[in-house]
Amino acid sequence: MITSSEDILLILVGFLQLVVAIILLLSYKSNKYVNIFLVLLLLNGAARALYGGFMSEVSNTFINHDFSWIRLLLVLTAPNSYLYFKTLISDENRLSPRLLFHLIFPVLWTILVYVQTHYGFVTYDAWHSIRSITVVTYVFFYLVLTLLIIKDFYKNRNLDLKRAKHFNSIKRWVTTLLFFIILVNLRALVHFVFDIEDHGGLFANVSSILKLVFVFLIIFKILISPEILFGYSKLKKAVNSDSEGEVGSMSSVENKILEINSKYYLRDKPIEDYFEGKTLECLLFLLTHNSEFVLVSSLDDLFESEYKASLPTLKKRREQSLKEIRFLLSFRLYVPVDSIFIETRDEVDKRIKMIKFNPELLKLE
Image 1: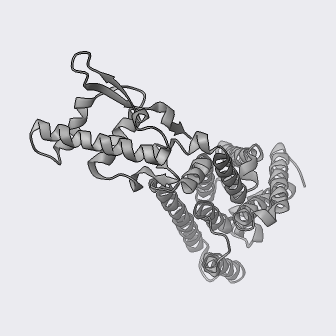
Image 2: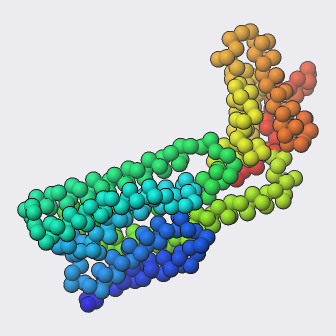
Image 3: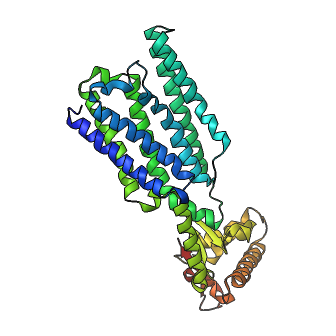
């Protein structure tokens, strides 16, 4: 029976989650793997919200000590969240039997809760402690796993062009969702461990409002982001479409170095695949400072650590590196050798005084 505005809000949020889950199911064929975990998360949340809204007289079902299938759905939220991030980031195309490993604890915990509820093999106080420690440990275990894969996701920046574009497309969504997932889990744990709903009062009201706000913001973000709403395969399709578009405009892209997330790419490969050592350092320095002229003599500092020799030797090595950069980029970008750098010369001896990388040969993404 619906008795309060909170019940109405629960029903609305549950209904929204159900609608989004249905939309995802309609695109299931194009998103078989990633969307399944997002669908499970939404259906899980929708079931709990709708149950809590319509059955308001037992709104404390999630923290009491009676057996409840609805309450046990909370146990599935943590692995579902982890698996969604894992598959979104790693681009796994099919379900693996190894995923059954993540069902071991929920099944065993369900059996344990059922036995304790009906037979009471330990005291109430002992069970309260066991339940709290177990659930908190379980949730933190999956939060740590999630943080580790996302740390690797951001740390592994030496990517090919296709993976770099994928990273660029999903990084904001990954960060946003992780932020709200952490908030949702922390709120639920505090609510659970301290039995806030049983105690009632201001803290219980604030906790309930925060739950609705966090969940609503996640759903709202999904609804206003079609590429997220339809899952990774849509992102992948968009990335491929971008790549095809670039092939179609070869003259405007293939004769440029691409900069994506402070990494540089030439012909779909990292710039590190073409240069090495001090020549690579010299090129990266010029690319990083492409908006300004730099003194040619300042480049000598890059070679001092490797070539502890006279000034003429350093200058010779610098000129060799610049020459290597000019000729290789000219060959790879199909442009004249003298168009790689923009130079200013001394009015007296006509030697190169200042230099910068030609910004027309650099494309930002």
